[in-house]
Image (cartoon, rainbow, N blue to C red; front, side, top):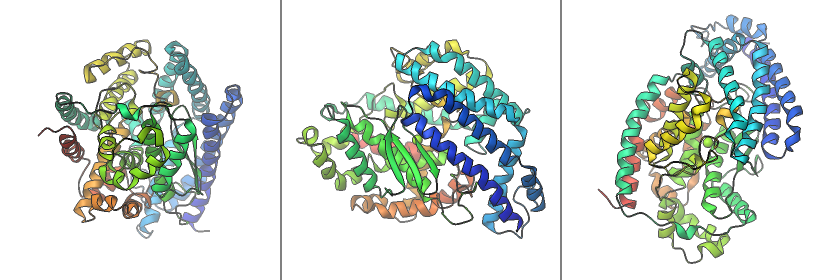
Length: 506
Ligand code: MG
């Protein structure tokens, strides 16, 4: 067997185990009874350890060496094809990181994470930070251990960030975010100084069953493959791939405000389209190449469909009558123009996942600042709720009354996902750059969407973003697509153009 084929075969074993873990993780968040948690955390820890054993198999190291892939020159010999060289780079990175982690830490992290997630759910339900805070302290400690194993000479945050957004650094994020923050605060000031838009008519009782029907219709409109995906409910909406042609999404419904579930579903469908759009060819299938480029690129796909498309007039021109047929009592008297401005109302609010396009990144900037302080020790866990509330007041002028609407709202830190939040804001920036690229390439995306021909947009994303899987690092991919580096100006320009019309200012 050729070196590269043997590598794919060995890699596929840990990928398969990862898919099995995903089935269990999906079940834990959707259907598992609460008392199943003890057995489930053991199951997940067992699989995590097994997967670690597979990926640290010394044979992988030998084969990578044979292929000419080293830590310094990961792409391997030039005689390999472009795709094989990209694959060698990815596998070298995966192998190099895995062998630095002791199996005991891998297993402990998996176990503690399951408990922490479960404690977070209880804490959030009861609005009791103290139920979760010891778990959070433990997650921080484990994340620091993880980072020092991977690279003891680097800043902890950089190591954790690199896991989700390869090649990025805390310093780069700080620079990008400070430019973004200044622009967003200016824009928000203008908006809040204008006549506020009304969205009161979108509120009203809407049964969950009706909202599910609406979600399924939206998934169909976006051309999502219903034979390769399914929709369920969870406390925190997510998308997870369980393997080839099986991607699950979840949504969360508010009985009195249907847009909440509607936009959550559009968001998760964007993630789902990415997962299902990765090249299914043998070189990708069940290998580390059949993956996303980064968390930020993944998020660009969800934000793209949720906002750039889902909150555009062009999209609703073709789709409004379809949702009116389902939401008869609520939307009966509501005109399209009202609906469009209502779903784009900008207002500081507590919950990140429900935030509008303008304030959304401010939520992320707050989390970035807090997690960076938690990791470097300048903020202690017990002071987190207060720091959160003060931060909200400073950034958006509002202060949550409880931790459910404050530091208990997101699952990420409970899962040990530190350094992950920035990818959400990067997703917005990447999505805006992609939208600009479509325009620059003469695609006329607004016109196409207004005609209801979303397949043109999806085909572009498939070819440029989905299909290549993990071939390109995120900075390479965005440069390839847009001809430039990550640039917050595309996003802020998009916002200014859209919201100066909606709010009637210059
Ligand atoms: Mg997302």
